[in-house]
Length: 289
Image 1 (cartoon, rainbow, N blue to C red):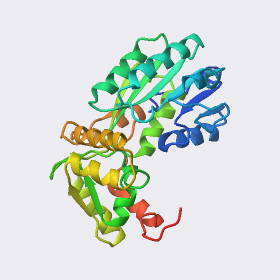
Image 2: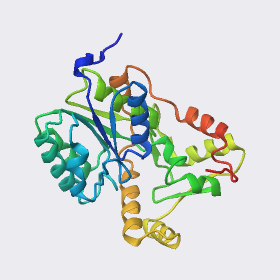
Image 3: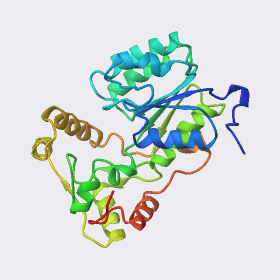
Image 4: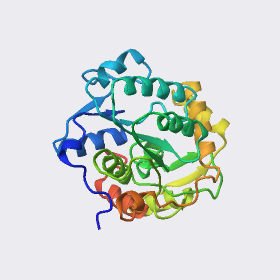
């Protein structure tokens, strides 16, 4: 049964701004919308016109003619300046008559929830996606090179588990919220179907690729030191370490039903992600690209 019917063609967005348009979620959303023949504006510094969260002078041109927007805040929605930037963006977008906004948020992050409240105070249709940690952080982000090297260090405890969510599920929910009825005013907490201890996650990857990969708990101080030794700026390293330490303190270990509520189906299994990614050779030591 289709609990969230498609919007009538006359109500589909005439132009959707996708911020972080070259990022993990943004580029996938753009592809989905483009495949359906829906006009999309890529919100990135290389876009035409460009969009940069750190440069408010780029926002007005990027929002011109837009009636729907997907917001993925950079560097992270938990960043100290995020709420102020989101508020300024929301004021401008309201003035320019944007009608529908979908926000990528985080679970149990006080700073992120302030950003959510900012959007909820505006006179438009909003949907919030509170996402668990992505499966694809093992293949496209923080832990890709650690997986290849065989040791994934995280400033978290020995037995911490996370209900990793597949980014394809997050993107499917975002596209549904942009193009279907029934999602306005909804907060979807998105997770996978089970909580996976970090040690188990790396063990599953190791079994799939036939090479040792293990999880190594570390302290925030050790994590910062390792990142700065690798060339990451000290303030950025500290922010990431603090973020991981907070996210992996057990607050988000429980699974949620957001994918089921939004899409009417079960979320993708972590094991399926591991098997499919291993089959691509992406985790191979000699993988190119």
